[in-house]
Amino acid sequence: MRIDQLRRREFITLLGGAATWPLAARAQQQAGKVPRIGFLSLTSASDRPPLLDAFRQGLRELGWVEGQNIVIDYRYAEDRVGRLPDLAAELVRLKVDLIASFGTQGVTAARDATETIPIVMIAVRDPVGTGLIASLARPGGNVTGVSGYAGLETVAKQLELLKETVPKIRRVATLSNPANAYHQLAIREVHVAARSLGVQLQLLEARGPNEFDGAFAAMVKERVEALLVLSDIIFSNHRTRLADLATRSRLPAVYGNRESVEDGGLISYGPSFLDLHRRAATYVDKILKGAKPADLPVEQPTKFELVINLKTAKALGIEVPPMLLGRADEVIE
Image 1 (cartoon, rainbow, N blue to C red):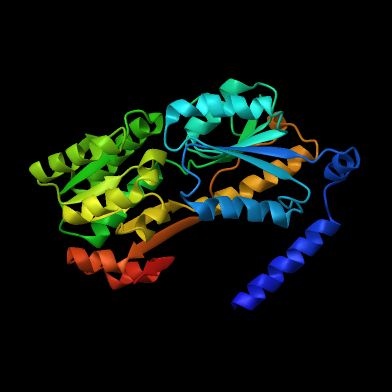
Image 2 (cartoon, one colour):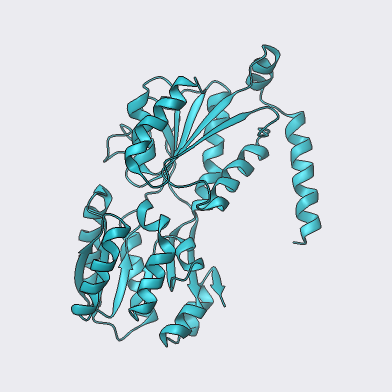
């Protein structure tokens, strides 16, 4: 689609949204009150801007235009988990109408700060296992939204794709974050897949960027031939450095998010986080119209993406099989 067509479509969307504001929003505006959303993030303001754009676009498509009939208060922890509770408390003191947050840490901080303000979670891997909700169908409490959990078979698929890309590999490192409860389950699934593929795993951990160098030094020492990076918000925030370390270590690597491949990784397979952020806007819309979080079932990912970076493949001396390229949703050249 041409750029001018995109702009025209967005303009029409804005006009249409202005004509179809939710009744609750109109009532609030007539009473002199514009709804306020608190957006709580572990990342920095400059990290992964397309995701935030997707969230705001989803709101616009539903008639909520930032600066016109809705206000968004942003709070960023700048990758410091310890700041999240204070930032969540700030949003509570601002008396926002709801809090939206990406990832388990942010949603947990928001939930700990308030039992009454609705919380819309975005891409939390295991909201039931971490105790954020009672169940997907009946979340209960004040938390609902879209889960990032796509089933443990996703990590098995990532290992299969890595093996398909580089058939000769026999030793694969798995990088996990011991602070991420989801990784314990994922590692068990990867072990099952590894046995069926005839692959030996080397399990390595990193809680943050200060432990990356040590993990990669261990990979070189153990002579692993490839790397699987489990999905984690800390890893995503430092995806460029991880991709650089993998390339310098001559390790083909697979990730769970497309941004890692856009920033130099070899291959990714997982749910579309852009889609999850757009869909989260529907929860904001429903809650501002009067729905209760406890009554809104949590949705799971429905759109998955396979992305391959041919520039990285060339740098690693890898020839990606044509059949795999044909299945890719995007190939970066």
